[in-house]
Image (tube, rainbow, N blue to C red; front, top):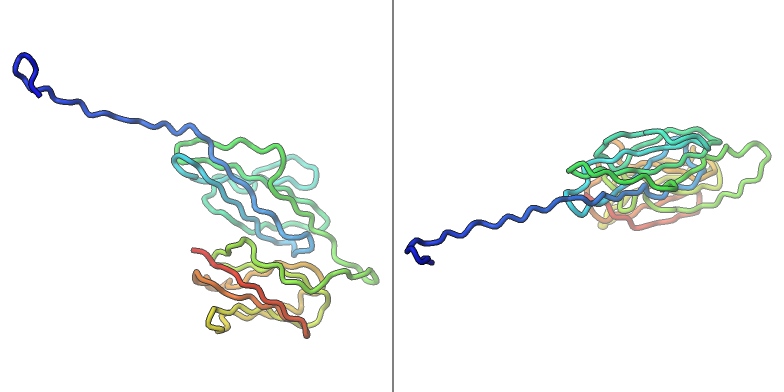
Length: 214
C-alpha cells in the first residue's frame, strides 16, 4: 500500500515470545508392600506445561532421619534401591524442566515403605497366594511382578504373549512365604504389547493381563 509520498509501506513482522515460568510437577509412584526383598524398584514421573521435564532428583529418608539425595539430575524414571530389613524408607522427587525451572519440595513424602523382618521360627504365617500385578503399570521393557506366597512349595512365574506362547519362565519356589517383587526379562527387554503373567505354586494358579509400553 502506498502512502502520500508514493512509497510503499513494508509491514514489520510480529514476534511472540513465550516465557516458560511454570514449575514442573512430579511424584514417586506407590511402593510395593513391605514384605519384599531388600532390593526393590522405585518409579517416578512428572510433567511440564512449557519446555518439558529435563530430569529428576530423588530424595530418600531412612526411618526418622533427614532427607538426602539418592539420585541427582537423572533422566531415568525408575531405579533399584537396596534397603535393609526393619527400616522404613520415604521418597519424593523434584523435577527440573528444560529451561531450569525446579519443582518445590513436597511437604510430605510421595511414597513410603517399611521392609519388615523375616518371619521367625514358630511365628504365625499369615501370607496368602496372590498375584498383585506389575510395577510400574504399564510395565517398561523389564517386567517386574509383585506377588505373595504362603509357603516354600515350589512355584513358577510365566509370561505369555496373546498367542499363548510362553516367552519367559522363572522358578520362584525358593523365595518362601512373604510378598515379593521379581523381575522378568532381565537378560533382554520385553517388546511392547499385551501379555499375560501366570503365577503358579502347587495347585494354586493366578493370571493377570499386563501391558508393556515403549
